[in-house]
Amino acid sequence: MRSAVATRRQFLTAGGIALAGAVLSSTAASAVLRSPSSATDPLPRPSPARGEGVAPTATPTPAPTPATVTFPVPVYQQSMVLDCETAALQQGLGYYGIFVSQPTLFALENADTRLPVMGPNHSVVRWGNPYTNFVGYVNGSDWAPTGFGVYWPVILELAHRYGLPNAIGGESFAPSRIYSELAAGHPVQVWIETRFARVPLGTWTAWDGTQVRYSYAEHSVTLSGVSPTEVRVNDVLNARQYWVDKALFEANFADFNNMAVIFQ
Picture 1 (cartoon, one colour):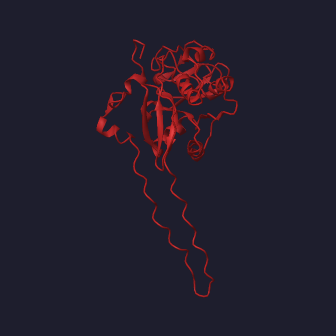
Picture 2 (cartoon, helix red, strand yellow; picture 1 turned 90 degrees about the vertical axis):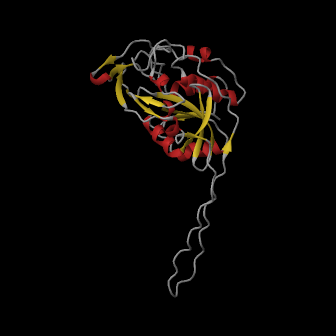
Picture 3 (tube, one colour; picture 1 turned 120 degrees about the vertical axis):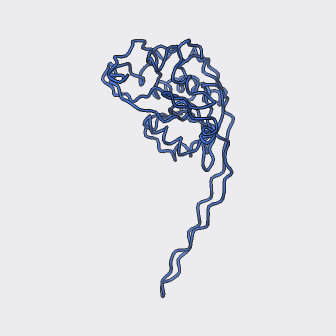
């Protein structure tokens, strides 16, 4: 990272998950970030019970196990300390042959660099609105905090502006919808925790009154594949691609109200 101040995202490194002084070893971390497991066919379902004198009914055909689907979304590294959202957008655009630099995209996010009003226990009481602007200093610290990030409406507007008018975004996406879009070959940007850590959540009130859900490990990545049990992640934190168990993904996805932008 470019900042001299260690941020929460810097604490959560590839060798382990460090949070509030506790470290998850690389052995344990391997259970979180791993290569795709082999898909196995489900056990056959038993036929429905048939009572005496009842006409036999057709045995339902089990749904086929979905195949693993991947597609070549480019893997980029974020060029600014806290600008993961813009880098994840850049990956989604890149899949469609559209290249726009991160500084160009970020300049259109109209950063609100006012500092937060803090409350007890290092909580944020008031700050900017990430639904309308990037909040804080992009090369600041997300633990101090002097910088935070940006949410789906700003990213979606930029996707439309730079050549993906059919992209959609929002919150409350069912995980099954995300998996279907990935199976169809559509990259999906999602908001999760850095390194898929489980961390405390909070809510601040924006200057305009909007309620903003946040964590100090807020992060955004681009999904580039799906298997029966995992999703493939293009992580801009250090330009890595890896697989994550669906249950862990869904827990992180829920932290930010199932927020996503689907590039199509």
